[in-house]
Each structure stands twice: as structure tokens, then as C-alpha cells.
Image (tube, rainbow, N blue to C red):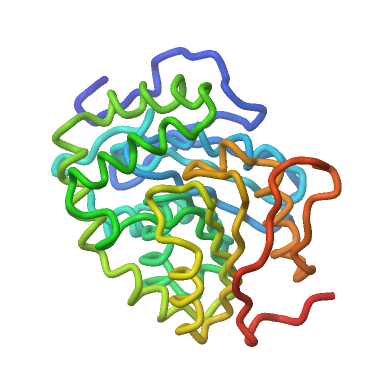
Length: 292
């Protein structure tokens, strides 16, 4: 790695059917994956969670690559991307995401986040409302429910036992690369971020997806209570049997949900996944576009 934090000269075997590419954001080398689709396809950016790279988002992103201009970046400081000199907090990451879109010449996109990626999306929508079409918030983490750090560590320990075993090979190298100092700094920024306030400010169609086995999330009744307080086109859906990393563990169900949401279709079980996890609505705002 050179003085700019570059990792782009390290040869690696491609890990995805998406093209692997590099760009530069604020002088930092940023690694990303991108689908090859017609230029008029709507853009969809997948935003990863705490300490991780975009690699664990690929199972869902790859399922959607033929329908959307799909991008999966490693945000600055994460994964294969270079690090900022002083680290980044949630607003910094949101601004970096906007400048990443600038580099790609993308004016508007739907943003799909998991865990920490959800606060990043909320902050992006706060600063750049004209640049986001829809928001998909999967297992949105942060805030009082994950404080203090020892509680979050306990929640993560429980969750790790509920995720597919193959997730270990994806997550552990990312966490080791992210490092302890970055973990402590980012945890503080994430849990102090005003996620609820930003959610209530949203004025775009928003899909919230939670798993009924996710120890980092409040129970469904609390999620429904929060959704009921909004007037911002919120659709909340629960997937039975899912824990926190839904984009990795339940990619078929999640991709089906996203397609239905994007097309304003009713939320029903995926007919192509019989016998798999059941998904169902727990809240639908009256302000959502009518289903067709």
C-alpha cells in the first residue's frame, strides 16, 4: 500500500460476476464492483455495514444486476479501498458516497444498505435529497439499542452463531483489516448518529427489512411503532429465520422484496423459493404508491 492508501496493485482473483474496478474519491483509491447493463437502467448502489467490505452484499447485488445499473463500493477506510488520514464518520461516508456517484457520472440512484450502511443512506438523503430515488434499509443498526460497546459485542456474538458458516470467511478478513482503533472510533460515531430523526425526515419511498432472529435490532413491534410515527412512505417487512446479514444469508428473498418494492407490487413470498423463509409486511404507510 502506498502513501495514498492504494491497494489497487494487489492482484486478486475476481470474487464476483460484477466487474471489479477502481476510482479515486478525495484522493483515496476506492474499489468497487459494477454491472454491465444498458445505460438507461436505473442505478442501484449497495452500501455495506460496519467494519466490512461490499463483498458480503454480492449475493443480493448479483441477483439484481440484470435489471439495475448495480454498484457495490468499498467505502473509504473499508475493504480494499484506501483509508482517510483521520478516519471517517457517518456524514463523511455519506459525502464520500455522493462523490463516488459523481466520479461515475450518476445523478440519481436507489441506495440499498445493510447495518451501518443504513445510517449512511439516511445521511445521504439528508444532504442530497434530489439524488436519491428510493431507500432500502436492511437491518438498520446504530443508536441507543446497540450501546454501550460491550452490549454491541454481545449482540454481534449472538448474531455470528445465527449467520451461515460461510459468512465467517467473508467477515473475518474484513474485520481484521479494519482494525481495532477504527472499530472503536466508528462505533462511537455510529451509535451517536441520530438515525430516528433522519428516518422521520425522509420523504421518499423507503423499504425497511428486518430479520426475526437479528439480535442487533429491536423486536418487530418496536419497528412497527417507529414506522407508525412516520409520514414518509415507509414499508416495513420481516423475514422469518433471518438474522443481521440478510443481504448475504437470504439474498433470494431480499432481491425478490426489492424487485417488488421498486415496481410497487404487493409484498408476497417469492414463488421461486418454495419452503424458504417467509416474509410479510409489518407496516405500510398510506403514502406509499398504490400496488399494481
